[in-house]
Image (cartoon, rainbow, N blue to C red; front, side, top):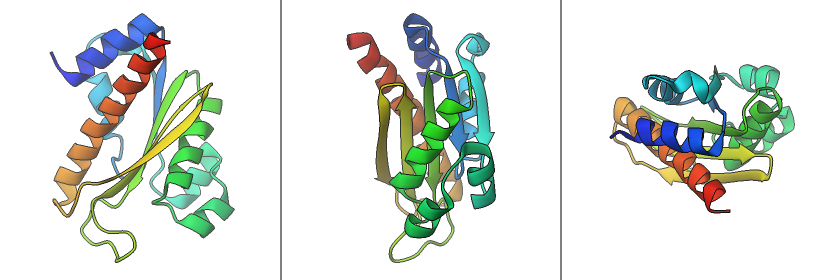
Length: 160
């Protein structure tokens, strides 16, 4: 069984509806989820908000947050996930924002991805340093990690 299939089973059991807000992964998380037959039962929508303007307009990310912390930050990941939660039929949202490469800087290196996971109970964030693996590998690793975060969120909900 695949991670996506496990996610489908867990979301069905929790009666959860998922939505994604993606920047550096460019819709890859949504595509991975919808690769599984039956995903329409648990997936509401995916928003690819690659530009700061899209993050502001589509998700309600604060321009002040972007200015103070930059797009690649846990603060922006949190606002992306929370913004989508309020703009969708989802009960669980996930966001990704990062630097897939090539490039990066001393302060924000290639391979850094910030994730946000939001539910009605609140939002959690996480930053993962995948390293300078190359653009494709960073995006693939970030997608896989995002699916794992969603599955963990559903598992913790089921345990309550």
